[in-house]
Length: 573
Ligand code: DMJ
Image 1 (cartoon, rainbow, N blue to C red):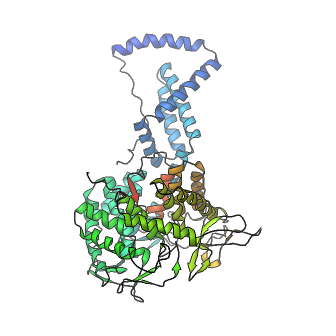
Image 2: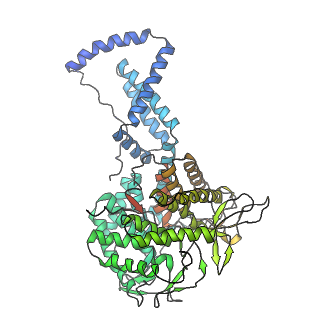
């Protein structure tokens, strides 16, 4: 796949004035022009309008032209695009009356096109947002992990240029060639994994390994595969544990892994959400050790006692290989992407691995039975948590990945009621934004189950922050792709506007905020998470794009950090 090409204007090819064809045509045009002048103004307008319509349909159905438009959306905002087209049309008008005629039609088409498709504005707005975020990163945090946009400095987590790598494929998809080239240059010259640093296995896999693999697939550039191989091999010591359940942390320079200081447990979602990336690395390198290591984790978890109707506890011990903290079940932090990766591994591998499907289907039934409930006031469907048989009507924003995952499953032939649940949960995630004064969701919401006229959503003071997370726009993207219902785009648009209103920092960057209920003082936290560029803006762009072949969901599966990996071709029969 290639990025949209940069074009500053659409050119029309004119006939050679010295050719015979042109001279013959000249007479015809002169008589046409005379006839044209004899028409009334109404007749002329009507013809122009019809021609404009013809042009719209013609151009829209011409693939290479829409390809050019896609490129423009990131290079110009709509107004600029219109101005460029206007300028070109005016230039053409100074030719003969024939070209004036064409120009008017073209101009009319442009205006109608822009007015009739909100898509142009929305895509351009995502591009503007990306550029603004990138500007801050480039100026104050270049090559570092995260931008601190308020203090105009940076934060370091692993010291591996996290935001830059997480953003690579987003820039490619948005057609931001110059920005991409600069970032690639940094990867080539500056990025080294030969560093004495402790990294978190899961975060490094989903953001950096996933980002490099996805960029390799989009660009075909070996550089990214070489870097991915180097990183993958440096992460492997994490799997050297008595149970083969990996440690949470690895020193990629020394090749030594260890659990967190306070426990020998690993987080369940972390050890079961690195599979897509390691499996793909094995496929590309033909080196089986990556795939074998992560498949072993799935095999162990598959047969482990302590699940409840497919729901898994949040921790697993690296020595014993057993679940710990049993009896607590959530679809939020520490368990979320386990469920997501069951389905996505099944899809990645060509729907051949039955254990994955079985675990996923069972888990969805478990979610429906134990965790899905409705609010009292207006019957909003939500996913709560279970703690030793006690139901807690609390839902992390993280759970909003679920409508998208359920919809993806239904699209791949899983039961239709998964889609029904997806539709209901999508509505709730939308309400988590819409009912807040800033239009942005808090990190955690509690739901009222009492039948009353009171609010459905309750936000505790400690949960009022927003970290620019992607899960809701991610699900909106899936829902739009599968239903084409424009309301999902409108909901995504409202979210982008709210990000712009309350989290955009003058000078460059976006910041997470402390209080989504206070539009006067949302309380900037001075941190732009890498997933804002890697995921949130990418999913918004894909949501607004009319090009359903742009990372088709029948060809790619997105990892949990929105990095696209190919669905494997089926083996020859
Ligand atoms: C991302 O790093 C991933 O989406 C992960 O699965 C969950 N947390 C963040 C975004 O919220």
